Length: 107
Length: 122
Image (cartoon, rainbow over all chains, first blue to last red; front, side):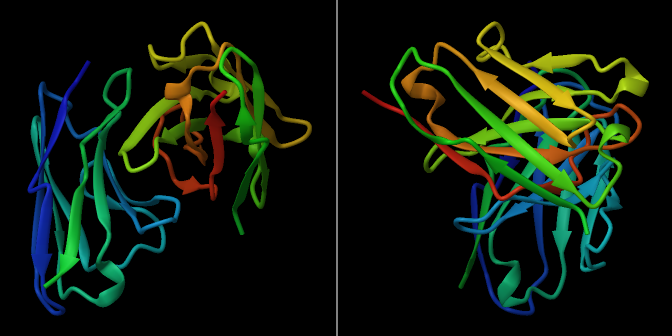
């Protein structure tokens, strides 16, 4: 199975900040990587697929990059609604696997 | 508007069965692949399985933890995806989500349902 490792596990930031979350795959997944946002008690929301393509309706403040084994999610100009847990996911091969999540908290 | 509504969750004893439904609207269900995920209380997301559209053979993939116990199916005439769960274990306790994936037979989750809670306990 492909292991996905996110860093950091938690992150404190202020409104207006720009933050970056890193996701590393245990083997080459090309660009078959997605990012999701989840708020407490809510279903996840799909943000990005193919490492850098925004899902429909997702604001351009979210951006993704990377290929191979190293990927990043960047969120610019943080707003209160952006504070949530973020997950990366690889879909290069089965089983599909997730990172452990990065909890983004308000400083 | 794309809508997915999971139902069928509840409290069930270990070893028993349960069937979850994912009722959809707002899109041509038969054209899309569908996935199931779960999230144990306080834990991260876990992939359960994936069913392709008939265009891509309707083939199914399962996570090792559920293979042989869970069955994913779809009824394109009713716009519903199912997750039949048998021989349930306490570790299957989780919120179960369905997702609408792509029309290309690739497991890229685009839209999520609200989830349904399954509690396996005696």
